[in-house]
Amino acid sequence: MTQQHLRIATPQHQAMVEITHEVQRAVTQLRLRNGVIHLFTRHTTCALCINENADPHVVTDLLRRLEALIPWHDPRDRHAEGNSAAHLRTILVGTSESVPVADGRLQLGTWQGIYLCEFDGPRTREVVVDVLGAEKAVKSG
Image 1: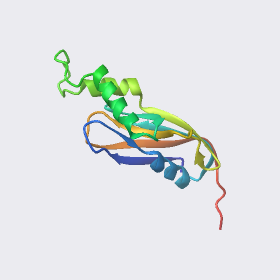
Image 2: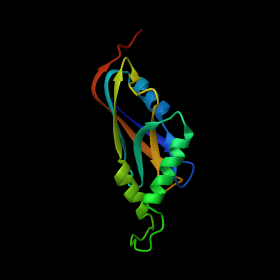
Image 3: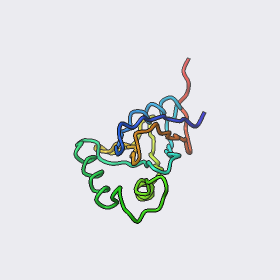
């Protein structure tokens, strides 16, 4: 197996949900020793990013700044569902990330975490974890 799907429930309309532990668990279950994992969300109103996970105010600040840049309500928007802002935020943040893995561990920096960025929730989102160029751990026993 070289792929897993994570299901992430988002708590509110806008949120950044840290999924680092879920991704690390997937790396362990996939028995990836060395290589790269690629993360992709199959949605048009949520995104993925790597950012600081030490200070919770960073997440709050980022969401506030995105709201200032791309307000939820814009009378010029024509999209019938009324969530054009979520689509634009997703385009800006992006729907994928790649992370190297060494000795079975995500090679994130000291202050880095992986986030699913919800822009039109709450919903249950799916993240595809795909192994690229892998050296698998030897199965013991």
